[in-house]
Image (tube, rainbow, N blue to C red):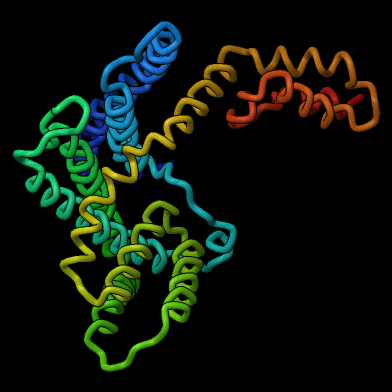
Amino acid sequence: MADINSYPSSLKGFATFVENCTQKFSWLSLVAMAILPVMICADVVLRLVGSGVHGCLEIQEVLLCLTTFSFMALLQFHDRHMQIDFLYVRFSPAVKRWCDMTVSASVIIMVGVLAWQSYLSFLKKFGTTSMELYVPLEFYYWIPVAGMALTFLVLALQLLRDFVRLLSSGHYFSVILGLATAAMFFWLPFWYRDCPYEVSNLVLGLIAFGLLFFFLFIRMPIAWTMSIIGTMGMIAIARNVPAALATVGTAPYSAAANFNLIALPLFVFMGCMILYSGISNDLFDSANKWIGHLPGGMGMAGVAGCTGLPLCAATPSPLPLPWVPCLCLK
């Protein structure tokens, strides 16, 4: 996990300012997460006795969008996005430097495109209102714009950090090769659009899968990998850059403000509450007293503890680690 100490002294002041901005902006996600369960419970109770909360569905979608984008920049600042590094850790230092520069350059280009297209989509929403509450849509569409813009600022800071670190150590070739690789990948769909040859969508899908695994194996965050592949695929299939980019501009809000995903943050939130309140420890302790003495008792106790309260499955570690050495000694 990256911190302020990973930045050179010339950038630490600006990095501290950016970190403070991301932390303050992330508080909006905590507020949204506090409101969501209360509103859902109130809506369910009121539906039992009559009509539910007016516009509850629309408000829940907006709060879900706010939860997603207000926390994104803080995750990026601390490098907490999900990554696959089982191959990356086996690379040589030179290859790692090339991978890091390729990833940094590719991601900042992608987030810049998303931020700009989201801003254009935000401008187009002026004068239109929502369907339930008749709220001007620009009050909703500013959320992905602000989240993407702050994330872009974090990525620019991280790219500048990598520049300074590599150039000060004399690794000029890694910088040039990484930037060239990122530029080549983003140039591919434009080359295919203008070339006279045309391949089937099946072949394009296979190429996309190959690029997907390549980006994942060089330790690009999964979220940005999917964004890059999706954008490049739309440009290649449609061969119409304005139409593809217009779709990209509406995708952040429409993908995040999806009622079908409302259970995900609440499920993880409840799982974390159970973990840090100690309920998961008590469940495992109780199950261990009943079946821990049997062969394979540790595994069965872990399953029984999670079965006792399925929400524990959302926690990072439903099996309390302090119990493991004790059971192994038995």
